[in-house]
Length: 278
Ligand code: FAD
Image (cartoon, rainbow, N blue to C red; front, side, top):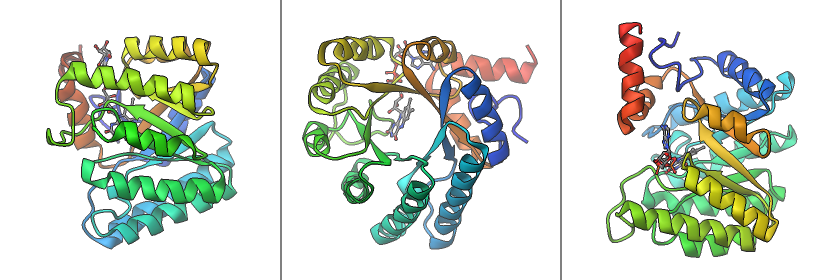
């Protein structure tokens, strides 16, 4: 069982707990993006095991009729073992999910994995005429070009600011520059995409900009935020827009929880209060 200290950010250790959390979200008109925690496997066996776990999760989503999709990390399904292993496992998951009408997101990790991730997204989005989405990071200098490539493809694209720390040769290092890139890229998507835009941000400014661009260009979009972060805003926004919550679960919750707790003072305070029972 997940201790109370982590349960704000992680739905539980089992798919059943993640689906129970999904039911609560669905009751509030928020949909769920389920992510089995796990990353950077250097051997094929655990990568294949997690790929299998995603197939079972897809079955659970289908039978429970939950309003949910899944999100997979490339290094969780074999990218650190080899690009072929990664591509094989993602294709297996997307093929299986497409047959059951379950959407699959591919998360984006370190800057040197972008090509391998976009390549398999392109292949699978064409193969299934959608049914799959990919994340791109505004802090990478290449992202304007990547969005031009993605504009012509079916499927969805999630724009985030970027959670990794890439070197200055390939990335914007100033927060203000990342924010400016995010706004510019968001506008590009609203202008050039036929929908399939996911605003992956908690930043009220970026949500406001998305609403403005939606008014201006008429393109549909969805908002995605993490479990445990600005949840009241998620419920409020869901009255007007499509809102998805990214819901991690699984027994590898400790490092994920640690990242959430350390990235923001409020999150750390929450964790300390939970330990003290206040
Ligand atoms: P920030 O720039 O961190 O903050 C801007 C403002 O947002 C703050 O001033 C505050 O007003 C508000 N805010 C932010 N956090 C909080 C909080 N905890 N509590 C209250 N207010 C807050 N990154 C990747 O690299 N690859 C991925 O695949 C990926 N997938 C993601 C999927 C989802 C659904 C989301 C939401 C994020 C994902 N990220 C991913 C992480 C992303 O790159 C950012 O690191 C993260 O979202 C922080 O940036 P931000 O835009 O939310 O806001």
